[in-house]
Image 1: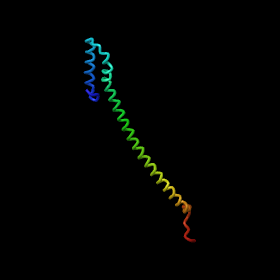
Image 2: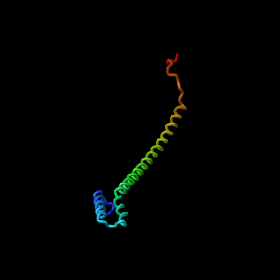
Image 3: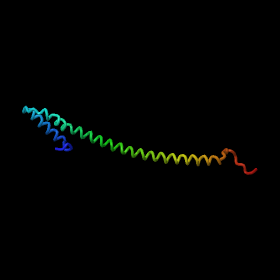
Length: 106
């Protein structure tokens, strides 16, 4: 059986065979590390999946970060343009009191 095919049912079957072999008195200490490794495949595969998901998440966040960086650069350019335009308009603008009565030339 391949590691990727070690599902929960296969693990249970292997545990039963291991216990039965012990009941018959076989000395299988040389085999124990391999059995333990096979039984830990589920935890290993879960970690592999978690690492895969985290890597995908990091890639997505890097893409989002690049997009936001681009938006920030564009926003800074727009801000500077609007600030310059505002300063130009303010330079030629003379503020008046709009609450005064209009004078019709008298």
